Length: 128
Image 1 (cartoon, rainbow, N blue to C red):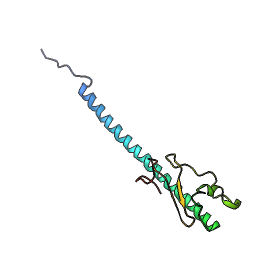
Image 2 (cartoon, rainbow, N blue to C red; image 1 turned 90 degrees about the horizontal axis):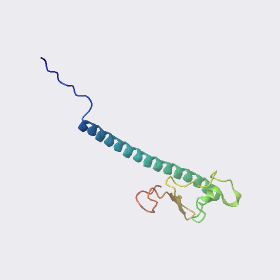
Image 3 (tube, helix red, strand yellow; image 1 turned 135 degrees about the vertical axis):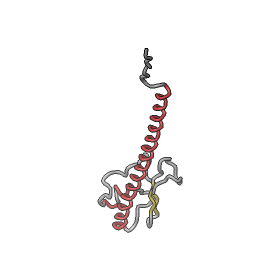
Image 4 (cartoon, rainbow, N blue to C red; image 1 turned 45 degrees about the vertical axis):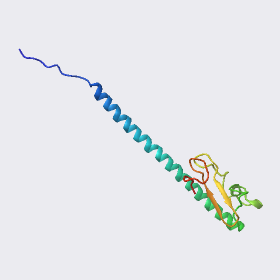
């Protein structure tokens, strides 16, 4: 008489848990990567927008021999004095984090920047 060994079918609880742990680790890594890519993309978008403002401000300076002062702000690019042609087609957009771009000028020079992800001034995540 020969003994037949019963063949085991299916997975053990340990094998299923091991596969679930591996899937959770892979999912966590993908989430961290995607979130980091989104932050980098927003930072690059802010840098590109600041560069566009920089170009428009330089054209404004050529036409008016000064930069808009701080009280005029970036809206002077949309509605320049003396009825000149606008340097922006629409109102200055918000930065990628939903805050207005910051602008200061004394008429001879200017500074433009985004408050960055935290929305607070003069922190390490400011862009500009």
